[in-house]
Length: 279
Image (cartoon, rainbow, N blue to C red; front, side, top):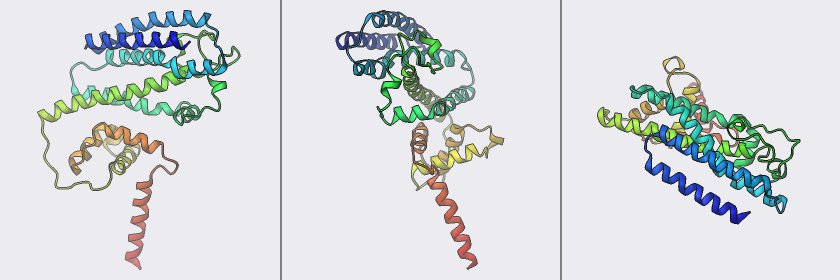
């Protein structure tokens, strides 16, 4: 298996990079990549139908560690094609909102199947024999299965869930970069004034504050997007947030409860100082 898969995925990655380097337009690029992936998926599935794994461990390795290299890209480029095809063509502000909306969908992704998401993110393996071994009696739960193949000889109950997690990670980075590109163009055209206030707390603390205000729908009747709020905080307190705000929020989500350490501290400190004034 290893000899076939090494050659297959090496050629696959090389060809994908070639397409990316020769095609700049994201829609054309996505279309070309998807056409190529469809061909390679048929080739891989033809081999998979005939191949007999030497052990359960080998089967798990293929469906957990190898298959997502192609299926995650299929899911990713399908989403890119949809996102870019529906992107506003003129207004930079509308483009940013479009990308931010998709980015917020990415952030909600981990809530779809919290238990497996934690299992995969933590590098666990105790249920691999359930998740990554084919069994015709198992229910295939991944919503993206229709994009690829629902033949139970070709997939396990969770290998496409892994592909979706990886695709979502790549999509987050893509959207963050798109938003940054537009913001960088806007900032060079309309330079902002320097604030007299400088945030001296940590970056993750201000991110915690921004997201709490966002979820509280504090600005513009709840219609303000995360990026808009972050930009105002950046200008007001001389701190560069850019796409790091999303990575910081990922760190906050991965904390053990309670998530809002900074906000809890603010509340406790406020109560203490108010009570001290009356003592």
